[in-house]
Image (cartoon, rainbow, N blue to C red; front, side, top):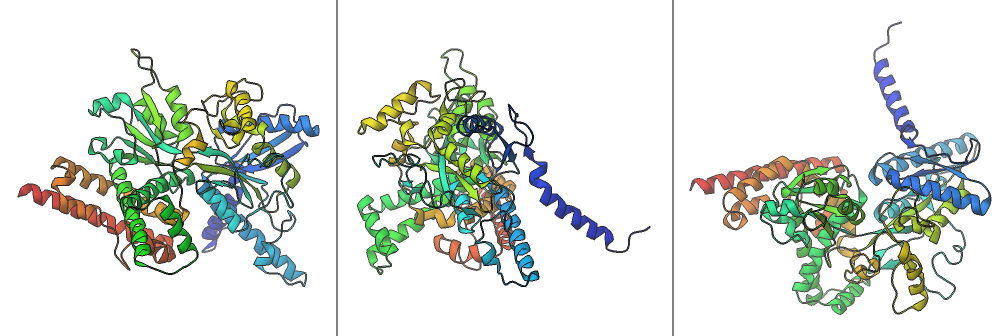
Length: 563
């Protein structure tokens, strides 16, 4: 029988909707069953973590649970992409579940609202049918908490010894140097810094004698077409790295204006208390806003040097190690791991690739784990969170393969969050914990380059400076460096070929301009005006603006050359 008009369209929509619902099931990743048999305990976890992490934590948790509770556990991993995709999926699932709950209540003659529904923590009422959200940056876990997609793992207090020992020593701090490591519903379990990986052979090819040690080094025209960058709109961790670049520029601007840490603390307290304005307070705020613009310009020049923007953060250090690119922005564990895997110089025996965290250029941020609202296997999910945060789970992040309590197949090369994995010269008890771990570690966590508690002390994260801009910066980078990337690189190439930035001031002015409608884009308007615009409209306007400006910048270079 022939289809009626519109039937094909309706079927297409239905199939597309079914595909979205089935997405986490299509992309779930099986684990090795071990001694688990069908019908046994199962836990459903959604994660952006890679196969190595999934394997080690599935194996480790099952063994831990069998030892403590007598039964192994099968983890049903749901892998649908990065944290951006995960948040979109969770948001749509909970919205649909809440709406369905309200309709059921109304049909039963009861009153209910969507707000009531999102206050339920019952798998039979409102649930996404997943237990745990494991991994990704703090930004998305905080969003999940604000949107009430997650709930506290413990109604009263966490198990003794999990966050603090019997003497009150913090084992997993709530925050450090301004970075929040755990909240009401999310708990940091592994730490990250952000930095630069580079290939020494490729640097020599470009006559670059000093390896990059700061973000600004990546703007050098000699890196044109040789910088690997990941897409910040696909990864919360990569977006955090870009926030660090902008935040450091703010800090430099504030320091250049003559403000030290005590004055900054005093000004920030006055602002938080809404204690009025003054000329000095206004000058301090102007320094922050000027630094933000400097940071955006810095990001744009790095984007102009980019060979590509990839969907995979792990691709950048792989390409640097292979010499496809000379340098790249990397998450620390990707950079260190690839540095170890890259081939060695036959003369010196040293790796041709290195990784560096710019001093004062990166905070130490946490990857959290959260319990999802209406978790179908709540008790098991809470046990998994306890395992990940405790000594047993933490060993997996940095123990060598085959060490007692360590991974069995993959060296994860990540930085544990628990204080006992790092030296504490002023606290003998904590230091004894570090010494017990040290013989088994893959990385020298006592070294200043790996000791995240020491690294954190060199960088104070001021959330007010850049945290509200986190999402808008993602879109700005996409429009400024990716969607208009061809035009950006063409105008930058023309500037380099005709004397460089110093000899092309008009072209640089055009290249570094920012949107001015409906108002000039700056620190304030980014969140007060532009963040309130529909995202698609904002991206459309911005991309059109940047493409036009970059073409004009290239034309300005050509005119200058003809003269």
